Length: 390
View 1 (cartoon, helix red, strand yellow):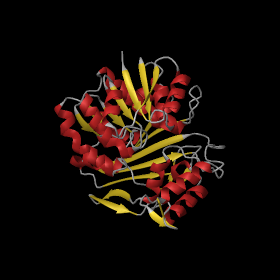
View 2 (cartoon, one colour):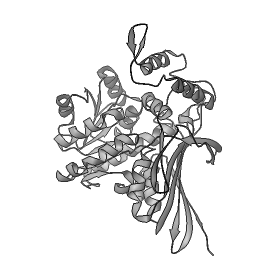
View 3 (cartoon, helix red, strand yellow):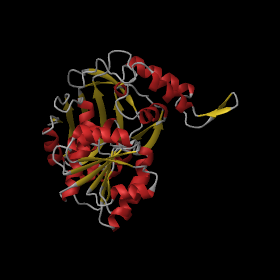
């Protein structure tokens, strides 16, 4: 019998994670600051799902929720990752999150000794990106003798209208739009402008040949460390406009450049306000903020790894893709964020994955088993090998 806690379980992605777990997990705890919303999710999912109110910044509340759990999936805002990890340490609960937007992930890695000391496993950044892309990189890296570069491209069918709706945490999207993008280049971490280095990339149809851009992301925080012994010199992450249409993304970019994504208070007519609070309030009032009228819901994650094998240059490309899951009523994008942590949380809960410490997905997750479990949910996998023979 397993008890798995989903923190932020009433959120956009938390609900989807809970839906996957509800298929066969004995008890799924949908824990959220908004108890009414959590209770509604539990009611919709039915048997085995229970709702709890929790403020993850309050150690007593967090401990009460985590006590006796077999695994914890943290889908709350990444700002709280360290708080939740401390709670899992106190309660000896295996931990998974969806990423820490590079800098928080780097801080989380420092807890490796604490988790190892008590024999508990933590896996950082296990959604789609980061997550699926990391496992792809680790899986292909193991096939090569040396690795020169890892390039990640995250694509989805975009809204074709002017919808302001967001596919995941709007706070995270605003951070990605406004904060510098970290890349690993010439063996060094470098900061570049947000949304810079636009590049067209050939995704499968119906995405096709699509424009991508840099974004601050957690894959770049760990993959260069995980593959350092193979001599990696370059790693970056690029995405297709966070699921927005390009027209809407440009509007959001303009607002960020004006300072509306800022989190430091400014004075307006004698009143202190945070520009981001104003923007979030307006976005929540926008007529299209909760509708995505045209999105086809197709998702593809492509990772290209270049290196050598047996002295020959080799380029490997792995794609994972998904169409909408009809029975669950969720897009391919949401499915590929929600199912990876749900899959691996089961492994942690039943002991299939036991590797004390704090790990990136490319270090801890067996690719063959992972892709097989995703296939049961409709996620496809392909590997393309381009090898120079002479």
